Length: 247
Image (tube, rainbow, N blue to C red):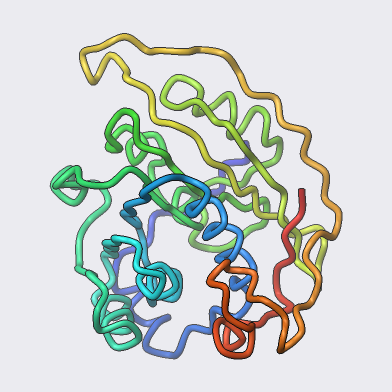
C-alpha cells in the first residue's frame, strides 16, 4: 500500500468538481460489471456510499431494484435527483453511523470511495452479513489517501479481519493500461466490534489477470445489463471506451 501525503478533501472540493460538470462516461463499463455482480444475487437491495451524480443509481432504479444512495456533496445529490427523480438520494456523511440506517439492504456499493477516506472505518460501519462491492485504484490523484500496489496485501489481507472477499477483477484503462481499478466483492464479517465471533478467517487468493474481456456491443444486440432489451433501447447512452473489464 502506498500512502500519499494528501489530506481528505471536504465536500466543497467535490461540489466544485460537480458544478463544473462531471463526465462519467469512462466508468460505464465498470457500472455494467457492478450491475452484473448485483443481479446474480437473489432479491438484491442496495445502499450506495458516495453515489456521485447518480449514474449507477439510475441504472439500478430503472431495473426495479430497491436502492438508496448518499453522498456528502450537496451538488452530487442535486445532480443525482435531477438524473433520477424516482431514486432515493440524500446528503450524508460516510463516517456517521446513522447514514447506514435503516439496515434494510443486503448489498453496499462503494466505487472509488475507500481510497478517499478511512477505509477501515467505513467497512466497520457496514452490518455483518451484508455484501460489499467496491473498487480501489492503483493510480494517483490529489484526493487519494492511498494507492493499491499489491491487491493481495492491500485489499485481500488488509480487509481480512473485517470481510471475506470472494471475487476480484483488474480493470484497466483502454488509453493507459497501467491505470488499474481493482473491483472486488465480499461479505462483511461479525467482528469484536459487533460483539460476536470473527467467522471464517480464510484468505481468498485471486488470480488477477489484466486482459481484454468486454467487446463492443452492436445497436441491435441484447443489452449487457441483462434487461432483455436491445442495446439501442436500453443502455446505449452509457457506451464508453474508457474502462474495459478484465478478469
